[in-house]
Length: 267
Ligand code: MLT
Image (cartoon, rainbow, N blue to C red; front, side, top):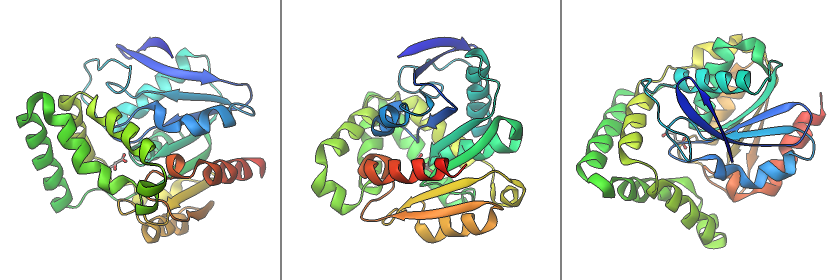
């Protein structure tokens, strides 16, 4: 793991390989390690960069208020600092995908291909946003145990039943990542997620070749919703990964890696 100072925080990231830059952006409230089965494999063909977002993993929090746009600005600042001005391949999962929409919207010249895993374009409904604020308040009330509470609430929604049975150790590793995350940061990010833009109206303007991947049993960003995103984008293909949930890259890395490589080899 390396760190560089960007936008007044210490940005931690892994970087490996040569070729076109490929940025792997994690979901909420996780860190770069969720991409560990993609990182090595893709680094044989691409320059892969897997950062920890501001406040997450080994990155420091800095001062700026959290938003999906701020995370996108931070990623551009990281690329600038690493001397990567050319367009990148962006690959995000869930919240990483929300950040991907902001990146393409605000920096279209910086993205050559988009890979969106288990993500949504619509913003939160009032009910969902209220649920997030209530969850944030409960996490803060719990003090140091707030992150364990967040993990207990999230883990059942992240994996398919098949994955709970087949790869329990990956489930437990992810629980540990969430439980080790600062509860105040989790609560703050819930507020940022509740306020994120609805990117649906942007989709038709996003003329970048896009691959959408969705776990068959993803209950957070369900296949029908992702198919609708594919239909709204000018250049998209859509694949369902059988037997997995919201964490497709972690639950079935082999299939996800094959689909990513196939998509990128078409260009
Ligand atoms: C994620 O995996 O990043 C979250 O499920 C996103 C969300 O809560 O909307």
